Amino acid sequence: MNGPDPQLLLKLVEMKMPFGKYTGTVLCNLPVSYLEWFNRKGFPEGNLGMLLQTMYEIKMNGLEHLLNPLKKK
Image (cartoon, rainbow, N blue to C red; front, side, top):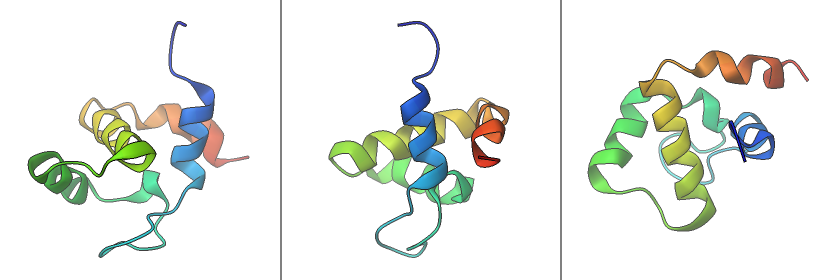
């Protein structure tokens, strides 16, 4: 597979944070500082952790524009 998984990216603009300070916030709208905290302390297990880590990498590499077309749907 080449390039980002469109289903994974779609989850980042649809799924809401299920717990913590930002409960109910769509993952793509989480602040960088919160994602940096997870990066230092450890991402949760499973699918949520993988999505948060992906969002962290997207924000750290300035690739948020990849999500814009999905946000408009």
